[in-house]
Image (cartoon, rainbow, N blue to C red; front, side, top):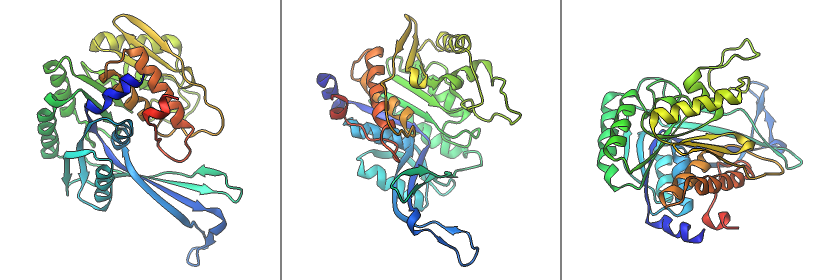
Length: 344
C-alpha cells in the first residue's frame, strides 16, 4: 500500500464545483446568557474555525493525502467569506488560479454551531446556510469553462462536485454538463468523476458516485413516502427504496454512461457497477459517537486518488471506505485523513 501512496505526490487532480466556506462555532452552554433586548438566549461562542467546504472539502482531503498538484476550479464572491476561503486554500497550497473571483456572486457558506454541554458532551445545532438564489451569469460560466479546458490536458483526474441543489445557481450549470460530456469524449483516458446531491443522472459519459437514494432518484424519480410533506431531496429520510430499484437504476446509468457507477450504501458499504459486473466492498465498522459530515467527500477524495495512482476499483473502494470510517469518528469536523492513518 505504501508504494501506492508514494505515487500521490506525482498526481495532478482538479476539483471543479461549488466552493463554500465551512464555519464551525463552538458554544459553551455554561456561558450562555439572556439577551437584555429580547430575553432570548444569547449563545456565547468560545471558538470559531473555518475551512474550505463542499468542493473545498474534497480539495482539502486531497491536500492531506499529499497529492502533488491540486487545482480549484469554480467561483467565489469578492467578499469577506471569499477572502477567508481563498486564504484557507492558500494554506493548503491548493492552486486557485482557475477560481474566478467575482462581485456578481456571493460566497456560499455553511455555518455549523456546536453546543458544548456542562458535562463536556457536544451536539450539533441547526445549520445556517448562505448561498446564491439567482442563476449563475453566463460570463462566469464561460470563464470557468475556459479555465477547465486549458487545465484538462495537465490532469490525471478531474473531480466534479455539484453541491448546489438550486437549478443553474452554482458552478455545474446546464452548459457545464455539456462541456463535461465533451471533455469526456475528447480525453477518454482522463478519469472524470462526478458527485451530485440532486442531478447525478445528468453527467453523460462520466464515472458517477451517489448514495442509493440519489442514484435511484436519477432513474426512477422520487419514491412514495409515509409522509404528507413534499420530498425535496432524494436522500430524504422518509424515502424508501427496494434492492431491485437500486440495482436497476445503477445498471441503467452504467449502461448509458459506459462508465462505472459507484453506489454508497452507508453501513452496508459500497457497490460498484461496471462492464465486468458488480463488486461489493464492505464498510469498515465504526463504534462510539459518530459524525457523518464529510464522509462522502472523504470517500471521493481517497477513491479517486487511489484510482489515479493505479489502484483497481476494488482496492480504491476499500481505501475510500477506510478513510470514511476514520472520518465519521472525528466529531465536529469534515475529516482529516492522511496516508499514515490509512496504513495502520
